Length: 328
Image (tube, one colour):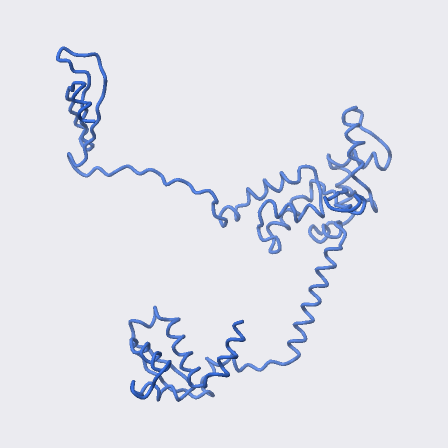
């Protein structure tokens, strides 16, 4: 939209007016620096010098409005040839080859293909890129991890723990795991239409030794961008799995020092109470009525308490019930 408006302006406006408009907009942009001092304007359009010398009778329309606007500034227009004005026109006069556009397009296409292939990557391949751990280490860590070793033994050798409760838990959990090429994966069934078997997501079962690397890669890295709890969790959940993963992500994000420093507090805190300054004697006096007390010999049931804030000097005056009601 902006480019179309600029092209229309170039077709309907002469080059002199365009140069003068650029001068006016430049002065507006730097008004705070130019308003109270004399400055120089260098231009390669010599006609601007002659416009400055014209009187109000010789210019009309928008040129007159722009000239009246510039009268509030103390400036001088200096003509500078275009060949010597390279510091201002370097970007607009830079030559561009057609090969650059071709290379840029090819780069975009190649990056798109890389992103698509990364989505189709196996979770184990992704974790190898993150941790640079060989396959043997991942397999050994899975078999020694407290969360996965019983399931792996049951799937491979049909061995169950000695305790009945733990054995029953292992049999139930093993239905959601498979071993592919010696690597343990967890099966996840996201909600959606169609048959449940068509929505299986194979997630790598991450041992304890590799969880910190995944959290750092998906939260602290440039691609992670220190996202919040939900976004970090939804990014990880389709590739990796370990018991209590959401709680670990929540604790990791909440204890990230950079997040605590950069992200604002969503809950506004009340302004702390400040004591009123006490400057001099009897500058501020507090008064209050206390009672009722047991009726005295003079039928007094209340007292008027007066305290000076500076000296803490105190006066107590007896009051009767009807006097207090009258004051209120």
